[in-house]
Length: 135
Image 1: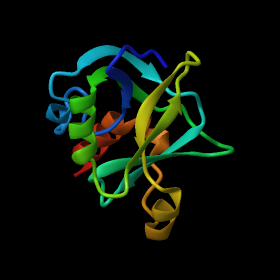
Image 2 (image 1 turned 90 degrees about the vertical axis):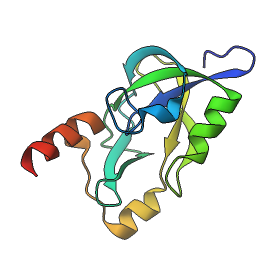
Image 3 (image 1 turned 90 degrees about the horizontal axis):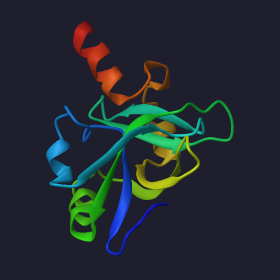
């Protein structure tokens, strides 16, 4: 993971993406690049589509598109405090082999509530666009 003193690289793939309603939660974090994860994850719509839920799988994973931001400790703590309940920071493996911090959701809760798997949409922003057009 590329990191300088006091900052970390954070992978954003949901409602804090550019153009999404929670982008302001990144405050003035520095946008680094668009990227994708390695195909090791699944993406679900949690809480009736309120936010994404990603977790790592052993098989049948997809590459999740997202954005990398460089965040200070204060920016990261603010983001973490504003994430939905149960989300937790962990490392995600990117398509180029690098890692970044991402917010995952417990797979057990996704399965418990049977939240829809939206992996086939090609990312959170694509899912929101597709479902907005329908609804």
